[in-house]
Length: 195
Image (cartoon, rainbow, N blue to C red; front, side, top):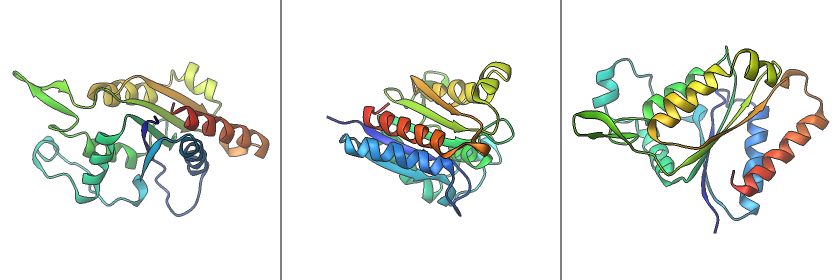
């Protein structure tokens, strides 16, 4: 029996296709062919405001466009994030999305006196697919993948999503079609495996 997989496209430009979109499509093809149940979220097409205070985060209603996103996250057994590295981290739109959906009462619950005591999204795994202009090895070893580690530890791990696997794709600005094809094939295989 297949997994419930949620694909979260975090590229903020919905106006034209990018490598992130092609990678998501390849993963989707592989997962579909293998019989996994799939839902998709394209963050760039959603309408939601930025959070400006702890008060808003704790007490304001979840924006209407994100109620279905929370339901999809709750449904999923495995989440796959796709985004380009911008200024060393995830695009601001994706961060704003995660801040909005990871609300108290959903992403974590009160336990005793601790309002963040119980992780609300345990039992889910994730893969993070990141494209970047620099060599992936440089990002991983020289920059120590700091923003990716922050996503894994301070957001996904904080709400109970583990394990988290990474696919880092570097030098995308001058990637030859043959190498792009190899990455697409790899993502299709990951989709088939549900990984």
